[in-house]
Length: 266
Ligand SMILES: CC(C)(COP(=O)(O)OP(=O)(O)OC[C@H]1O[C@@H](n2cnc3c(N)ncnc32)[C@H](O)[C@@H]1OP(=O)(O)O)[C@@H](O)C(=O)NCCC(=O)NCCS
Image 1: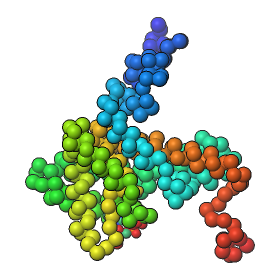
Image 2: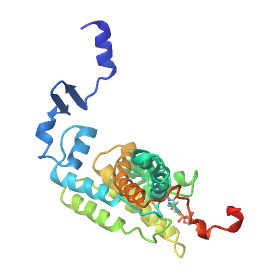
Image 3: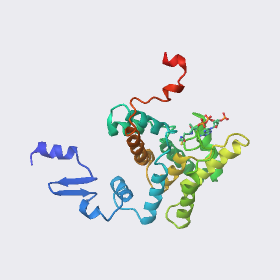
Image 4: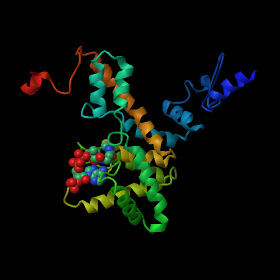
């Protein structure tokens, strides 16, 4: 090998995959050993972290991925993908359009939620209780914005995905699968919000918050909470873009032209 060959090999050095003629290894495992014996959720874990999860870890991760898959055309990401699908851009661009809507207030809040819950966990010892740690961290976060990531929902008074996800985490804690620190932190923030908003519209944990608890309990760093949500929502984006592209509409707008105010159509 020349120095240039070495440099070129180093440029793309990766621990994730090793490809040679006739050989594909993912995290040092030949792909032919994975095909047929390992599920997609396990492979997501394998590629992101190396090693395979236990069956219970897989089940918890899968529950989070299932929960985020779709929220119908009410969700900006899904609506945008469906509109894109009618513009002649192809499925890949329709999915990317939806993915690019997953930001700090829609589907991407899990990243900041993990960061906030991590601060609560770190503060807990000094503060003396989960409740006090939550109050302190909330005050700091709310000095920048009243909206705490992972709480509240535009549409649901209580996000129907919250309870089953949190119940699974409780069970995993009881069985010693995860430690439960992030769960305690999230419940403390939720309770503090509840007490503070007595009589006002409640803002319980939403999908981004509940899945953030799972991702953090499983040891995924904060940015991957957003990355994993993107993977999950991509399934719904594909399904919606595909359905919409079969309906024959061209250049679908946000509302039907028939109900558009006259001043916008003239
Ligand atoms: C999702 C979200 C945009 C929905 O907002 P919304 O229902 O339109 O809420 P509004 O802006 O009308 O706020 C209503 C009240 O609830 C409060 N509130 C809403 N979400 C809150 C949150 N996450 N933390 C604290 N307070 C919140 C508002 O401050 C407001 O209080 P007020 O009545 O005293 O003025 C909002 O809850 C939010 O930004 N959450 C954080 C980001 C997030 O988790 N996104 C993922 C959503 S699935």
